[in-house]
Image (cartoon, rainbow, N blue to C red; front, top):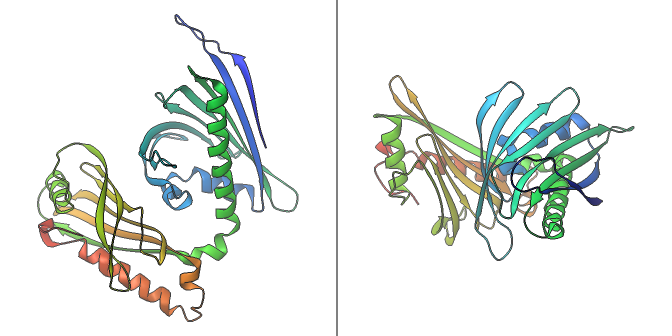
Length: 308
């Protein structure tokens, strides 16, 4: 259920904008604290929400942080949306207050809060209250927020209610190595090995690449490459192998006393039918082994050759 209201904003400056508000709620058959933790765990958003490519905590001071998000825009227009949100987490009352930094398309300002109220029987009610200012027709913006908010809530509900069932579908493998040089040099060499010849501090590029599949075949598909020099590289495959609903590769770099520690990770979510008839978990083990082998291959010595 959603509702939109309008009020005059208290704002100094040459122009006065109206504040418009939207509200939505959903009932989730899970403990309120679990649902709250799931939503506020920014690191878990690439698994929680399929359209999220990457997230980072940019700043953190106690219960306040600044989170950054990279998301693929839905619909035929596509593209990548990047934004930052300052959040205040109230663990004691299960409440998150946020305000996005900067403009978002036609939205001048956007903020709000999420509330998680325990219900008798162990479930909870999740409410979102958004406010925004805009120079365009507020009904258009409210409709967009309502559609996305409803999708966000449905996805959150499904994730926590099906966690026990879907947990085995999440497959993750990582390997580490120590490379000589500085973190800046290693990040640059890894980027070149991935076909990205740039020294920019931040990159976000769509591309088409050949993707090996677990069955030994190779398919061509769309990817999103995000570079955050000098510490992170993420490649999300928008057309994953048929066994997976999600497939992502990433590299994390950290300067160590003896060189640069590089952690390569391959993350996948198997489709339910992939593991439907696997009582001995042999299929799951084989997919984990395949991901592990890939993560190992993502750590070439010195990052000196091209990686698929």
